Image 1 (spheres, rainbow, N blue to C red):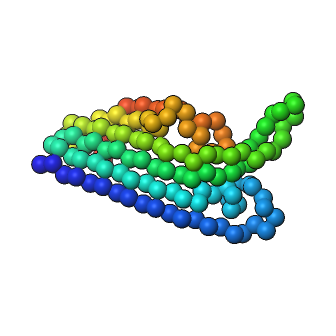
Image 2 (image 1 turned 90 degrees about the vertical axis):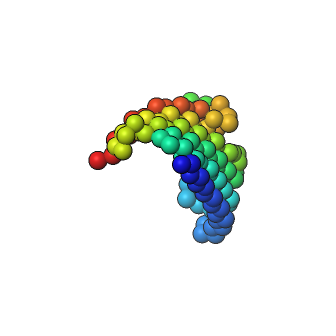
Image 3 (image 1 turned 135 degrees about the vertical axis):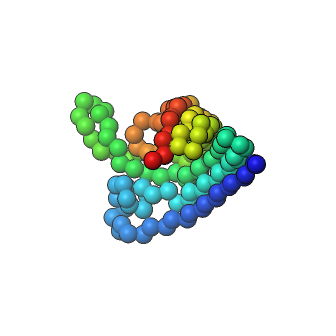
Length: 130
């Protein structure tokens, strides 16, 4: 039997809590205004295949810069970005699942926060239900 599943989400966030215009994390500028997520998956027998995409609009965060040999806090623009994830899994039995996960597959390095960009990742997992 083949079963389809899907998901979708949207959030609009408007924060007006900092009259001084600070760009620290948690302030109005440090929170994306728009986030969108969509996902689609299918189960065919013992196989599961899932794909999801997440869009996050630009934001600003405070980051650390070592320019000039001294650490300093600076505004870091995190551009809007899309993250594409894929998953394929095989259920060996009712308790054990083998899976291959791919994260951030659309771009080799995605900047999701003030830190260094997130590289494309592929991982294999074994899941055991107790």
